[in-house]
Amino acid sequence: MTSTPLSLAPSETEALDAYSRVVIAAVETVGPAVVNVEVEQRARGRRPAGRGNGSGFVFTPDGLLLTNSHVVSNAAKIEVSAGDGTRYRADLVGDDPHTDLAVLRINARDLPVAPLGDSTTLRPGQLVIAIGNPLGFETSVTAGVVSALGRSLRSHSGRLMDDIIQTDAALNPGNSGGPLVDSGGRVVGVNTAVILPAQGLCFAIPIRTVKWVAGKLIQSGRIRRGHLGIGGQNVTVPRRVARLQGLPGTTAVLVLTIEPGSPAERAGVRARDIIVSFDSKPVSGVDDLHRLLTEDRIGASVPLVVVRDLEPRTLPVTPADSASLPRS
Image 1 (cartoon, rainbow, N blue to C red):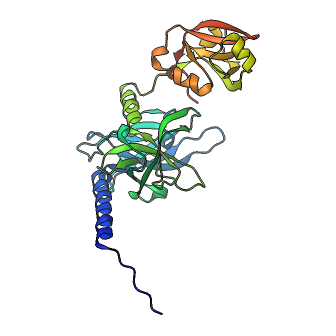
Image 2 (cartoon, rainbow, N blue to C red):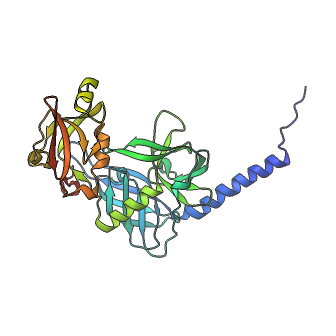
């Protein structure tokens, strides 16, 4: 019995060619702006100095690049190599561990630039392309679809990142910081994480967030966020207590520690207090509190409602600027 070679119908061939043309055009548009980021890391405590690498891309012709904060964390020296083999010494303009983004600058002009798109127009099922340097293999291309939108993901700082793009475009170590590109060759996200050993669970920071963070980093080098100076954990408030005291929910934040001289200490917050509201907004957990501690709350006195001895108490608190705190 002989088998007949598999052949594609003309319509299938045309569809495959169209798909290939879209991916190729997007890569030709963005690929020249993608760089390999190499980092020499400082020794820290008992941890010896080491090396790391990731990806990044040029977004202004005068040498500004985007990458992940965790790629350049603890860097003593940063170098980037372009697709044409040119190597540059890079300076850190600023980074934000809480959104895992960093801006670098190289001394170069008239560089190829990756055009930035609009992540708010993305839809599940839409074609996306990841470009980066996984495991040192430069300018590697993978394609897939937007698996979901609006995911939440922990940054390396422990803070929750919202509105994350989930994709099945394959990512590997070294892809971090590279662009996620739509079919029009526009960057819609910065690749940040992959969940191992799962397959097809990859995540990118939406370009809407990236534009805002990059602007702040270029302006001041850091992102200003409010800081209370407490350590806490999520707890469940008994329904009876919640109803009796008119609390907004049945989960809240239990205060475990208070930093000396912090806004919380000055406001009279005590260990074992349960925070249920901040600035008239319900607080159902630590992530809620983080979201509410925005730049516009810094230096402004706002009401903090805590439950102490089963009684709600309102304490005026003035958040400080977290950017002024020493970094570990």
